[in-house]
Amino acid sequence: MGETKSSKNRQIAWYRLYNIADELPKFQLSHGWVVDGISLRNGHIGGKGGDTSTITIAAGERVEVIKGIYVRFEEQLWIGEIAITTSKGQVISAGKNPRFPEMVISDFVDNRQSGQTISATAGERFVKELCFNV
Image 1 (spheres, rainbow, N blue to C red):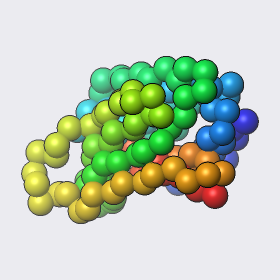
Image 2: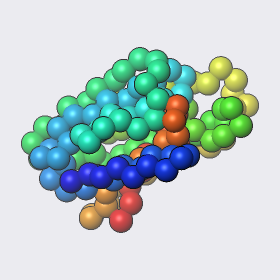
Image 3: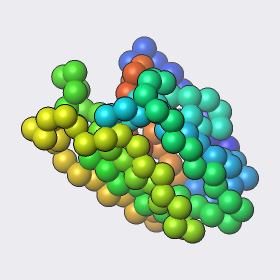
Image 4: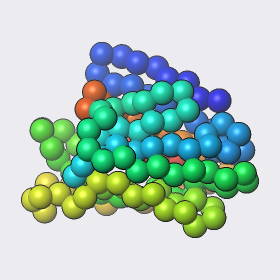
């Protein structure tokens, strides 16, 4: 079961990874050349600009890998590109290569470990982080 906590500067949503199909049958990513927002079961965090990509999680399927790039945009670090892979090989990707390669700060890859949950952090307009946590 997920929960959302809000403050003036950020919103955070947590989701358990085990038995994720019962809790999170699908989710959506809003994106342009950065990841604007994520729609999860209990609501939306971040912005709603750009295109929308959707992934449906089948029974017994889990998110296994989250990878992408961080970019500097509007004086802050955001996810510029992301690819999420499930245990059945489904991939949802969002964001585009930034217009200016010098805006790329780093790559990231996060592989799920037993007992971890998905954590997402976003500002009002863009997503800062999507990763696994204990």
